[in-house]
Image (tube, rainbow, N blue to C red; front, side, top):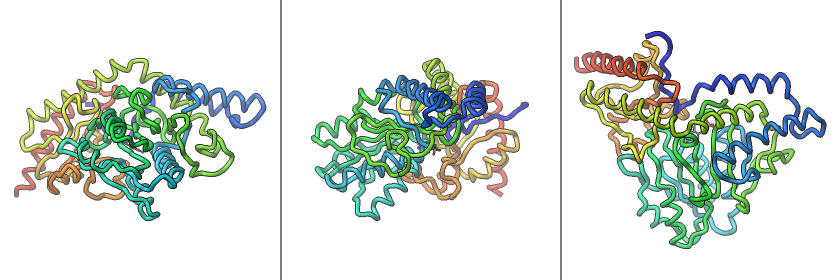
Length: 387
Ligand SMILES: Cc1ncc(COP(=O)(O)O)c(C=O)c1O
């Protein structure tokens, strides 16, 4: 098969052509600083406000509740540190799922060193949080709760509406933060309906550019800046905005949400085709991703028992197929996946886990080829392993 087969869309996505075109136009023509008072500044400001409107529209929130950041990691840091610091006088207890992205878990570890107490919520074997455990951890000193919407390694959808109901039932007014970086554009989400206070997004997961993110902060939420400077973005995130990147983000959201349902159906059918094919062709596998209603449409995490995932990854790469072992965002430091560990997957199975993640750019022919290649390579590698 000619060309590359990119199945690592949980790590990042290829930008839409229209995104690239608009960004080039912004860089060439509309290069003003959005804080400048002259026409060039106003053009740039209007351009970023257009994206603000597009994102607010997609989330069904107010335009003045959306702020731009330099990516998902920064948005999560602002959410976590900004809310924890602003509410320190009310209490020092925080609740978080044990399978959050490192940009959240490592920020909480840092806060623990500063005297905050953090409860980590267990998950089941499909990577879904234990609501009973969550309920037991809610206290009167709880000031902040962070639960991701979709897990980036296994694709599990968390019961974020039920989490809010537990908080309400227990009379807890903690700030509720949801990392929606893997779900935005892939799973329906309405933060106002659920009662989310702070929500974080990243452009490069939905065919936008890298290094651009956004944070939704419900009006009236107590949050403090953690970056100080020229007070851009209403002081939530100082620093000259990445105008071209933000415009690219807006375009990516427009295109994604124009065909929201069709995109989801396409990703789901490709993912299901891959899953079915692998089950049919290969023995001794363990599927870590949950079933349909509990799983995002784009992620499939599978352990090939007896195989080292990294070896399989490179064997597939030699056939122009690109996948991931666990999550690429944290694979600079190759350590066993904290998500699969929390799901109580055995060490050997964690070592054999591959994450396939599709996008609407993939085709059924690519999936057929991928199934053939995975089956052939697993068979071959197992032969060597058993010698
Ligand atoms: C769930 C989740 N949160 C946060 C991030 C970090 O986003 P960024 O790469 O924009 O810093 C990622 C990226 O993989 C993610 O999947």
